[in-house]
Image (tube, rainbow, N blue to C red):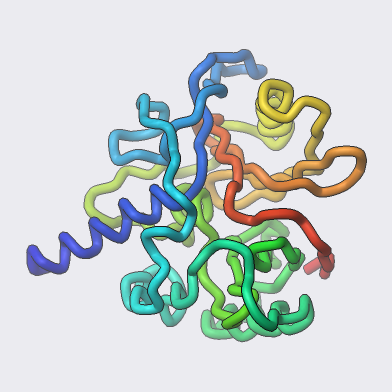
Length: 258
């Protein structure tokens, strides 16, 4: 690979980490069978490895990927490299319906050329649509995507879906980046405990629903007074928490039970 190409890809990866959101890891806490860190904000999975101290994540999600010319950079990880339209902020103008967003995601996964992937749920937020794509043979999530509410562009979700997904993640096999492999060492129960303790510190009174399992991590809906208020993910190897800062207010959802 030419040096110029390597530099471009490196810039994209760094941009993805900056727009990903907030990973929270600092104050150690006990989880059955292991010790994990949860607490102060830091950048996502830095190239230094999980758990390394980092800086506070203040980048605006999407600020470094607001143009529609990045699609080709993602072709090794996602069909057609669909990163076009990955802008953030409150949707402007006429927006898609939840059903139309579902149709866009269906078209997206059809490009994988397999019948083992199916949409499990679609959610509408203030800034975007979100969908879980499930692997039917395992019954677990395969990956998560976002849909631009105005253009209908489908692209990998920021944060954990890019950086922690050991099967479909963006950094898989790139630039010597070392991802954990094999079965996750943190169970769904432990991930729920980790999320609960993080919420006690940062969103008192909030709870989570049953975790959705993905290759390398878990994602959970955050609830307060019985209503969805957001989402967070827990790394299945390190216990790091990544709060999803890019959605905005929750509006509605459709559970498809893939």
